[in-house]
Length: 403
Image (cartoon, one colour):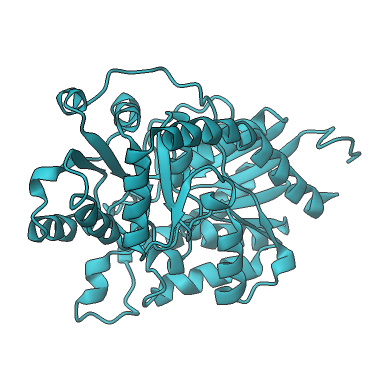
């Protein structure tokens, strides 16, 4: 193929995913949506394979289904390590059966898909699709790109990574021709923990589109009218996301700020534990737990909040921080996050340093000029953090393999 610019001839990519909006539990599906839409605008033809048939609207690409869930095993939501699992007396090398069986069944279905849909390469998103990606590579002889959105070391905070999942991840990245990571943080983890040459790994940051958001009525309007500040936690309530550090920072904040409440949006295996810690800290009257929100309700809570806190123990990227900024909300992100590599006009703290975290939030409340500057400058940064740039970098990875 002749090359001029990024592409002069159409490129056919078989892309393997585990979830896609609106059937997604987090950032993985949103990242697949944003990236594929941007790639399609650059004349990349995508056949996107999901494990089972769900209603999705994706006119920019061909969506097909492996239909592997007939045995009754649920393959959604996306895999997360259950924190309580590791605290039980079960062996740490026992596998999460639904997900591993699902990943292997996905791989078993790929031969028929490979025969039906021709592709120049296969692009595989996260470990649940890696066995299928490796199988397609073996069957077709086409290059394999593995895309790392999260590793088992992120999900477990480095504590007892599941052996089965780790082995699948390791096999996938070692067999692939190129590895895409969503941040420098993730790139270093993949190199260090999976023995992959740094030169084989390309960083492609996630993006965001449509950051000119419609302004919506506030939620918790009565509290806003009384001068209360709203501090937001939004994400899966799991070990990786650091919910306990959010509660500990909240406990210190209320010692200095009388009019402040904390909103927790999301669900997860640590939700009960988080509530118990809130109760034992005497903060139940300051906390609101909403459960999982999407669409307009999620937009409203972003816009109603004064600061969004992402205290993740290890966050490969953190699209939610970009979402918060797009809604005009100040952000405090852990230094252990990929998004902190691309956003400079946000507050940052180590996830474990709840004193620094609380100090910075209190300062934000007490110095309005600081809040205004962070809101305006961080929104300006979003202009350079978009899916078009991610697509261009992804195509450059494809070109390394094909031209």
